[in-house]
Image (cartoon, helix red, strand yellow):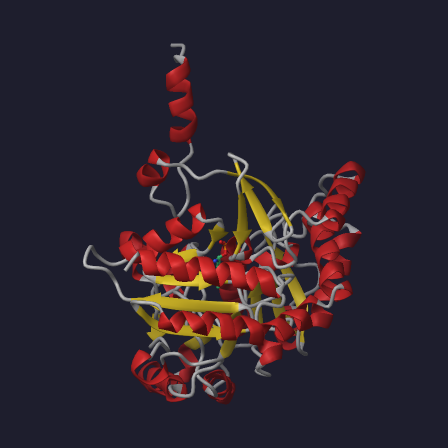
Amino acid sequence: MEKSGRDQHKGELEAFWMPFTANRQYKSAPRLMTHAEGMYYQDDKGNSVLDGTAGLWCCNAGHSRKKITEAVSEQIAKMDFAPTFQMGHPLPFQLAERLSALTPDPLNRVFFTNSGSESVDTALKIALAYHRANGEPQRTRFIGREMGYHGVGFGGISVGGIGNNRKTFSGQLLSGVDHLQHTLDLDRNAFSRGLPQHGAERAEQLEQLINLHGAENIAAVIVEPLSGSAGVILPPEGYLERLRSITAKYGILLIFDEVITGFGRVGDAFAANRWKVTPDMMTTAKGLTNGSIPMGAVMVSDFIYEACMSGPEGVIELFHGYTYSGHPVAAAAALATLDIYEEEKLFSAADRMASVFEEAVHSLADCPNVVDVRNVGLVAGIQLAPSSEGIGKRGFAVFNRCFHAGTLVRATGDIIALSPPLILEADHIDQMVTTLAEAIRQSA
Ligand code: PMP
């Protein structure tokens, strides 16, 4: 049956089941972005919107960069796709080497994926494969952290600690997973600048889980160095170091999920570099291609790779991979992105701009209902008290007001997150914070 014009229009809005979106609310007042350049988006009505979130924590070099566009179009014209299994093409090899130079030693091996979720599930599988190859196949347990976000694969939601992502699927999550307590502590750490002073001792809970299950049964601990999606929860000073020393003591792998913290967000290439704590694996995505083409990568330590390579030659060492692992077009985008980061020295630019950003976001402490402001590098969380209408209502109202006033911020419940592109200048920070302050006041 033919659809009428009106139905067709409705159909266009209705057909797309939007991810992580209140579909019915959105479709009653859609917000559509059609163009982007540098620090700004443009919506379908031609309004300019300052990007306070680097897209979704990913467009670290700003939008629609010519160098990336050209690299992508050249690569598609030359070769769109190469069979991935038992076959290679040069770009992912070049990219892997470039990435290994950015990460701390011994994270020198790279497994390519298409997203952060795939990177996480890949890292968990590599952890199991490593222990099996290493003669400890009983090491199968994983430890994540409350409020952690590790994507939406079954592995990722199992080690993740955000209730809403798990509840619907609770009967089918991975077994043998425990969670450390999160590190949010408003009583002791509210309005900290940089890493909070208190709470490193929460890492010691790992010893309790080891006592409970036996270290010999635990494969890996996975944490975001800072929890982004849960509302920018920072690791207390010394916390990551303690996790590192406990995991090392017991032969448990430590995985940092650097999907958000990677590629300059905290003022260095990775959080591991910034805080000088080297995990055994690192998951990445987002900023790897500046958000332009889906791609993820798991950075793996030499000793893990070598253990997995110790079986008979000619046999596939890891039965895992994706049709698009190391896709030539994505690899071209990533190489061009790394060139931009390097040529424009964007990681140190982020570090330099961090103090201006810090001053500005902490000025929001004076606004009504602000119960915490926390920041590091070019990422900040502004936590608001929930309104009497319920949790998340004030956060959404602030997000909406900011959007209509021309600034994109991100609301997670009642926490507003800022993670602007690293190319921003002082007047962008001014605009972002002034708009946000006004929106918070109007939502009081
Ligand atoms: N890990 C972390 C820390 C993330 O922030 C995200 C995405 N926000 C993911 C994993 C999942 O990435 P993706 O959405 O690309 O699957």
